[in-house]
Amino acid sequence: MRTLQFLKKEALHSLAAPETVLLMLLFPLLLTWVLGMAFSNLSVRTLDLPQTRMALVSDGGMLSRLYQANSGQSGIVFENMTAEEAAEGAREGSLKQYVELTDKAVILHSDEGTGMDAMMVRMYTNAFLQQANLTGAALKAGRLDLLTPQVQKHVTVEGIDGRVEPSSFGYYGVTMLTMIMMYGSLQMVSMLSREKGERTGLRLKASPYQMSKVFMVKIIASCVILMLQAAIIVLFNHFVYGISYRSIPQVLAWLLPLAVFSTALGVLAYQVLRSESAASAFLNIMIFAMVFTGGGYMMVSMDNEVFSKLAGFSPVGWVNQGLFRYIYRGSREAIISASVKLLGISLLMYLTAFWLFKREEGSDRVAAY
Image 1 (cartoon, rainbow, N blue to C red):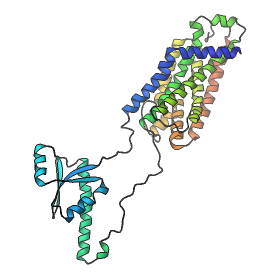
Image 2 (image 1 turned 90 degrees about the horizontal axis):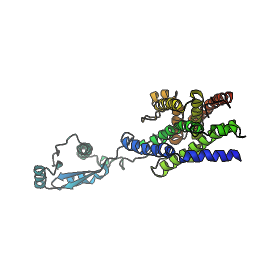
Image 3 (image 1 turned 60 degrees about the horizontal axis):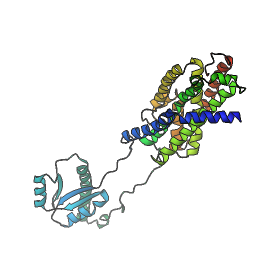
Image 4 (image 1 turned 90 degrees about the vertical axis):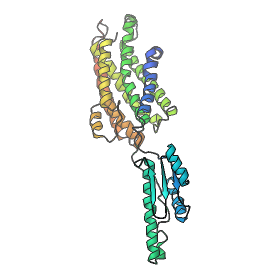
């Protein structure tokens, strides 16, 4: 019962702290939005072309009607215009380009000959003229069987089951999440130093409640709070930003080893360095290095060799790669491997920190109190 009460006290202390809301919740959500918007154009793998509209000057004969009738499948809409209207529009500057169709040639009048609209018209016109020439040659040769095209339908577009890459929001929805979870180590340091700052350490030592249990309760409370913060961020990203995590419960389960690792790193840093300021400075450097090498600050492809090599040295990179491969390719191998390694390293750090704690328990030099 006392353990649960102490756990509740630690949780309320941490949740009520301003840095919990500002740093651990609002900061990653805001950063995800800023970076997602800033790099949205870089993450686009396809370009949706608008429908091309082009003025057409012609005599209205059969060739003109055929030219217009077949243009719809090419995404081009020709708008009939007289030669006088085209000339007047060109003089006034309201008409930048138009097509002139005669019985001998197709002329594109344009000041933007290398633009997208001009390119679309040239491609369609070349295909149309080739078909017209083939039809004329077939008529001259008396081969009426060649007048009907062998391919009855235009190009049909079908999707392929390729490798999906995350969008900018999808990318930073993962990397900012893992980054802020690493800052949970600073949250752990703050919890360990709280008794010293509030001068309650001596009272705890004098109580019948074992100090080793206090130590364990703080660790458990830190992990629980960190997972709660991660769940809030994931749910907000999913329902507000529309970021897909494939399966939110599974993603949260894969994040638990990272929470354990982050907490263990904070515990060990505080036990070794014995000072909140020294431990915080050390952890800030470590977190930056792990997030940077893990691809947290810049968008890179999951198949990028440099990213893969750098991520191999970073626990954050292990998790990022594992989550990306699970979310976008359905593969669990990388994230399972990352989880096993994180739990193994965390166990070593916890044992080392607990040994340091027990070695000086009760003395004035115990780092935690």
